[in-house]
Each structure stands twice: as structure tokens, then as C-alpha cells.
Length: 395
Ligand SMILES: Cc1cc2nc3c(=O)[nH]c(=O)nc-3n(C[C@H](O)[C@H](O)[C@H](O)COP(=O)(O)OP(=O)(O)OC[C@H]3O[C@@H](n4cnc5c(N)ncnc54)[C@H](O)[C@@H]3O)c2cc1C
Image (cartoon, rainbow, N blue to C red; front, top):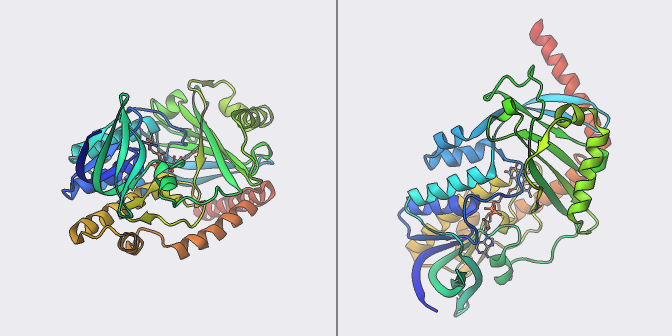
């Protein structure tokens, strides 16, 4: 076992970890970014990159690269259980996660962060009640790396959160999703004009209720080649932990029963295996700091339930944690109190009271957004509003 002293160690080079590493390295902080995987690697995701994420990428001077690897989606077709449809202006990028995550890691390296792939963190080191490093295994060799602050960015099943005692009981209700790539989807050319004007679709259907299915143009050729990300999220309210088969069976039932699904995906070919993941929708108002530790991204369960854009919350918390770590290094105060106060005080971070409010939103969403009848009414109303709007425009 050897021991090296660093300023900051970040566990996990997903979007939260690598964006945090970029902000820290940009500010001149000595930062070591560790991931058990080698990049590029794939991950269950809808590939939807929202404007807020793109803004972080622009601040880190990688906007051009993101633009080149993405399809620009500017409309979303919402389809209800009974076939009601509304096409709504909705801007996002469709960017394959393997490309996006690799870009973010490369960006961190370009700002001066050191990145070690294939390096699994196996535990946290504590001294006098404070976390001061990690134990890692890489290529079969175990070692210790010491630091002033550890940032836990290791995703939904965070070892950092568990080891620090910050993760409470798993919540009764849990959202699980899966995604895969398809080629040959038939996007309606009247709506999707080309690579830079594409639409995605979101289906609310009884077979996936409470939940939804999406089809989002993403990666190579986008709408032109019918290359898309297809996936679904189901909310298991009863605490059951379904297997792959349950999700895949629901997907097949939807495909067999929806005429829209048949017209969009009937001739399409699945070109990658299903990948599955858990959504850490504000699972609880857990503490996000301990002595010497800050949690970010899915490890901190910061995803906002209404929008489901976990990457946006990951990027915001990454920025807030980078600012916090910088302050802590300056003041040489790594206590949980100092970190919590600075992290929470950061305008882009959410404090526990706000989180509790959002938990109420989550219940509201379960009762409305995930209820096929309410979705049907909402889409019908939107459709009417849009047609009135169009008539007014014509007049
Ligand atoms: C099906 C599905 C669809 C989704 N769709 C979208 C979407 O379209 N848009 C959106 O914004 N969000 C989406 N999300 C949410 C989004 O994927 C997450 O919020 C986001 O990945 C969080 O980023 P992160 O960096 O916190 O964690 P992760 O992306 O999970 O990264 C964690 C990293 O930590 C590494 N790691 C884990 N343990 C260790 C360890 N012990 N040692 C070293 N490294 C470790 C992992 O290898 C990984 O690289 C979706 C989620 C799911 C499940």
C-alpha cells in the first residue's frame, strides 16, 4: 500500500464527476478523477441534454464539440394512452451518452485534472472522524490515496454515500429505466426537416404506467438514418424490484398495441442491448456532506422529478461542490458544517427545505403525470390550445 496526498479526489468520472473536475482544475486546484471504467463506455440514458447542461459545457469551452456530436431536437410529440397527440416546442440535444461522457472526461483532462480509469474505489479512509482519502484497486493492485476533500460522484448506487452513512433506507417507490439504440425509425419528414431540426416522442401508455416511453433522435445521422435512443421509465410504487424481463415485456406490449409505435419503430432494428438504471429522484432529503466529503449528482440524489434531466442536476451540483471545495481549501476547513453551509448557500444548490417541497412534487407527479387519464386530458388541452394559437396566428 502506498499513500499520496492530493487536494481533491473525485470518485466517478460520469458527468457530475468530470464537470466538477473541470471546474476545480480550471480554478487551479490539484484534482484526481477516478473511475472504475474505461471510456468511452455506455450507460442507460435517454440522451437528452438540456440547455442548462449545454451552458455548463459552454462555460468549460467544449460547446463546439458537443454541437458536432449531437442532434438538435426542437419539438417533442407527446402521445397519450388513448392516442391523443400534441407536438410541443421543446429544445434539447440528443447526444449519445458514451460520446457525452467521454467529452466531459477529455474536457476535465484538458483543464489539468488527472484522470485514472480502471481504478475502483473500495472504501473511504478516515482519520480523527474525518474522511481523508480513498482505498482503490487497479489492475489487481490495492493502494491508498490521501487528500483533503473527497467528492463522491459515483452514481445511483454510491459507495461514498453508503460508507459515509449518508444514504438512508431505500425509498418504497423507485423509478427504473432502460434504454437501447435503434436504427431505421421512420420520423415524420413533415415535422423533422433534417439533422438540425428533429423531434422526439414521449408516449404515456397503460403498459408502462406509471411511467413513459421515449424515442429521441441521437448520434450518427439522427433523423436521417432513423438513429435513435429508445427507452422507458417505470415507477414501481410498491417497492417491488422488477427484473429486466418485466421492463422488456412492457415494451413489447406497447409496441404490439400502439399504432404510433408501429409507424415510428415498426421497421426499426435494435442495434444495442438494453441497458438498465435506477433514477435517484430526490429519493430522500439526505445530508450531502460529511467531514471531508461532498456528494454530487446521482450519488446525492439531486435529480428533479418533474423534468427528469438528471444531467442538469448533476452539472449544477458539480459546480456548487467545486465552489465549496475551493472555499474549504482556502479556509482550510473541511468540516461537515462548513461544507454543508457553503454547498447549501450556493445559489445553484438546493437546501433540504426546498428538497422536501420537491418531494411533494414527486407525489403530485405520480398522481397526475403518470396517470394515463390525466395525461390524456392534459394533452387534449394542450392540443386545443395549440390549434387556437395557430388559428390566431393565421388570423
Ligand atoms: C433510463 C434512464 C434514462 C435517463 N435519461 C436521462 C436523460 O435523457 N437526460 C438526463 O439529463 N438524465 C437522464 N437520466 C439520468 C442521468 O443518467 C443521471 O442523472 C446521470 O448519469 C448522473 O450523473 P452522475 O455523474 O451523477 O452519475 P453516473 O453517470 O452514474 O456516473 C457515475 C460514475 O461513477 C463510476 N463509479 C461508480 N462506482 C465507482 C467506484 N466504486 N469507483 C470508481 N468509480 C465508480 C461509474 O463507473 C460512473 O462512470 C436517465 C437515467 C436513467 C436510468
